Length: 144
Length: 144
DNA sequence: CACCATTCCTATCAATTCAATAGGATTTAA
DNA sequence: TTAAATCCTATTGAATTGATAGGAATGGTG
Image (tube, rainbow over all chains, first blue to last red; front, side):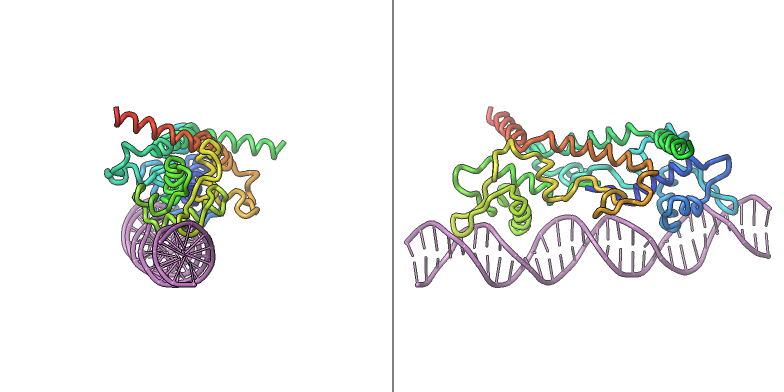
């Protein structure tokens, strides 16, 4: 059970947008350089976030991306679900509408239900604005 | 982020061993039939559990497997860690001893730490004996 | 001792996912 | 018109998943 780089990069991307947006769209190349991620790969990831309406884009020269809403309006869960798909899927439950035929007499389902609640609980409890705060605290530490 | 069938099958296997052991080793073929899993695949999974000392085996005719300890001594986390590896690994942290070079100034690490604690908390809170109880309750429901 | 059921071990395989890399089409500010 | 950016889609190598397959080793039973 793991978090792919795609999801991790998506979070770093959103955090970068939250921190470095100053009225002008932020370029993927700049984000890629700052976060040390392949810019071509980041393009694909931001495309997913764009289709999910988490970011807005401006095309052409001087173009780039910005958040579609305020940092406190995003949870980490929202970002990860957009890029990674549903969190904690277990094949036996609700894969394209077809449950395991034993789901009503299979007790292991209770495990996955609890796990699902725990994971989504944690990830929906952390907001993008929290990351921004943490980042600022960290910078203060280094400066002082 | 998902749980593979290998982990799910391992849990079903352990539960089957807990329920159907009556003094004689339980055969993989019987478990496979009852749980509707390929017996050849189950062989590989039980082999992992055996190497992790979660089950004991008897070879030869009349051979089979039994739990190495009592059902209340196993947590779901123990079983899943044996088959799936560490739960919630994020490449940026502690992959073969080499951290991300930015780990001390990367705030996303805090997300993975919380997530890790939540997941392991839930899975280490559920014991194999809980599954046995749930299963028995379910049987009672059907019988009454 | 011979048989046969069982665990044990290893190889192979098709499909999918992961993590990029690559090339170029489209748009737009200057 | 040009350059810089987003946008779109294809390809690729490596790893993982979820098995299938074949046979060696073991040990109880007749």
